[in-house]
Amino acid sequence: MAPTINSINNEAIKPYMNEEIKFEEAVEKAQVPIKKFLLNQTREADLQLFIESADIDKTNLNRENIPLSVLVPAFAISELKTAFQIGFLVYLPFLLIDLVVSSTLMSMGMFMLPPAMISLPFKLLLFIMVDGWNLLIKSLLLSFK
Image (cartoon, rainbow, N blue to C red; front, side, top):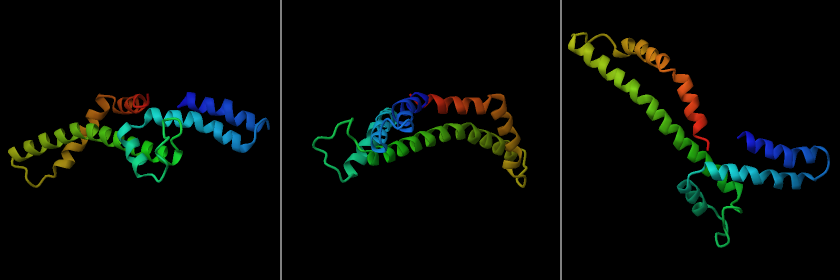
């Protein structure tokens, strides 16, 4: 995202602040790197979904002239899909811990002891041992191309 912000700053914001260009021209110049970033990060299927549902002329539509009203929701849906995938992958080891703790407690005859009370420290221990925050942030950063 940093190259996109730098490009917007150099091509649109600084010239506008120096009164070299008008506001409308600054907005047009800022849209180019934003559209490029959004197109690179959006899944093709999500983009097609919003293009098909949008009330726009599709005859001369190409990647350069897709409106932001189509790109932004397609990007948001694409990012939500990525977030759910990451969330599911984070949840799987915790589910496994719950199953192991539950089956162990049941085999010991401890039916009245809530498994969540026993499994929570193990989940926290696992998260700390595998450096969970670092892995989570790294996967989020690597999700941007």
